[in-house]
Image (cartoon, rainbow over all chains, first blue to last red; front, side, top):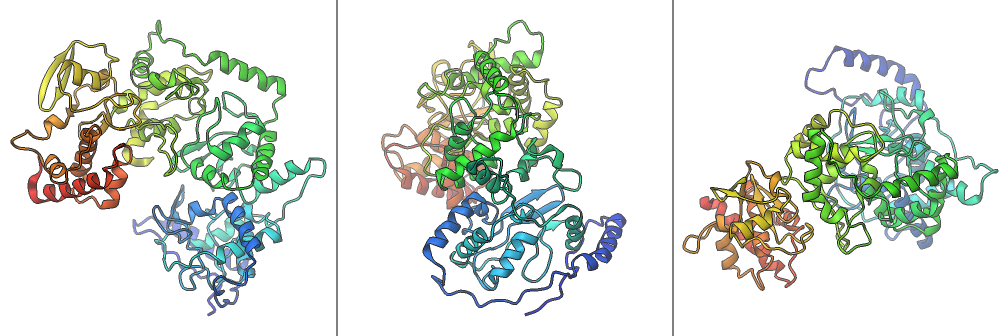
Amino acid sequence: MRRRACSVRETLPHDGNTFRLRLALLAAAALTLAACSSSGPIDSTPPPRAPGPFDKALVLRGARLAAIGNCITCHTAPQGRAYAGGYAVHTPFGTVYGTNITPDPDTGIGRWSEAAFVRAMREGVDREGRHLYPAFPYEYFTRLSDDDLHALYAFVMTREPVNATPPANQIFVPRPAVALWKARYFKPERFQADPSRPAGWNRGAYLAESLAHCSACHTPRDALGAEKKDQYLAGGEVGAWHAPALDASSPSPIPWTAAALAAYLHTGLVDEHAMTAGPMRPVVMNLSQVPEEDRRAIAEYIVSIDTRAPREREARKQAALAHAPLRPAAGTDDRAVRNGAAIYAGACGDCHDRGRAAEGGALRLPLAIGLTIPTPRNLIHIVRDGIVPGVHDTRPWMPDFRGALTDGELADLLTYLRSLTDRPPWRDVDAEVKRASKGAG
Amino acid sequence: MIELRVNGRVHRVDADPQTPLLYVLRDDLGLNAAKFGCGLGQCGACTVMADGEAIYSCITPVSAIGTRAIRTVEGLGTVDAPGPVQRAFMEHQAAQCGYCIPGMMMRAQALLERDPGASAAQIRQALQPNLCRCGTHMRILKAVARAAELMGRGGKT
């Protein structure tokens, strides 16, 4: 079946929103004709028969790569069938739903040839020739090698086909406008190794910049959703969470080492660092399944982005450790800080004063990155919702304080905790807490 | 002195503001349904309700409660007139040693007040933080589903 290459099929929202949008749409449509003329449909292919013509070892390699890509997270609905789509990705431009990438011929990608799959990954165009929203991170996948794309194709085409159609996208950017975005911000390219760096570093750079797409969350974006290239890994936003900076501006109280980061990517829990929470949890869950050398390589590369001198990093570490016992808030005349300190003593101290080494103990909080990032949002989510363990996770966990603390108490607690760091106070903590409890988070 | 609204009554207690709510309930007010399990918010045996939400009373300082209404198993019904959750737990003999049961009941109560039509999956999800060491999970789940039926029929307390 052939379809028109770049049909203007997305409808505008019904809220009457607006002349400006319509103008934008017209402009987009006009310019798009030129921009996307090279992206025609690719003929469908008969669905491969299970177990398919794919080599087992190739499929296994594809599985490990898919784990590094965190593919399952955005392509699986909560409690849904694996890779059958329906996961809501909330962006500043609306909500995009992960598509069904099982080999179901009607609702999945069962009719996609490898050429169509490779084009989607490298150029952000689906089999029928339509531009894909960059919520699908082809900006990064474009750097993948032929071999790895081949293995990923073998993996997805050998998944169990599921007949499922995800909900329609709720996004106010018409699809043809994506062509303009791509023309301005997207460059199809392959990864180029840096011969002056060791092989491990290059492996890590390749994985981090392509499949793992770390910077998709950890790099800030501009108003049009494009990465600010001059602030690579300087900290970004992902849904209601802040993804901390990984470069020299890293707020981590103890600077990461490659060994610590590799262990964190394996278990989500390493000494003297906060345990993984929020959108990073599924990433770690997936990375826990990949070969150790790949985690090490990613860690080696990421840590190299933090260009601070070893002496400076060591000094920060020693200062953080020396600082870790909580300073009493006595003597302060800030009401919020005093109240927050009392709440800490009653609700948090039992675990967090003990340190991790003790039975039932938790991280001493001045070492938690949630206190040093520019926004209180992560900490609000963690205190309110807890950090719920996975199904087979038997470790102690952070209980939720939803309902136990009022919004005002939570705000005071956050204000107190922030006062323990070397960072300026957060502004508008009360407003942030209110926003989060309204369900914005 | 701290004023505390528990099961529809106002109490005045003389307690350090940082005292866990659980201690005040048990030691000062003699309400012994909520149990001390781990003291760390890990097991759920201490679960009570504050303004309709299930909370861990062992890690909630009494000073944080303010004017919110606390509810414990003692507030769900009496021996002569048990509430729907209590009736359902008895019907299904959901307790073995019984230590976790008050926490289970209060978390179930909070769920069913919010959503009397909760599905089996939602019940499992909601009870996830509460541990039972005897292994009566299946009976507990059945009891909560039964309580949902009873409450749906207008048995609301």
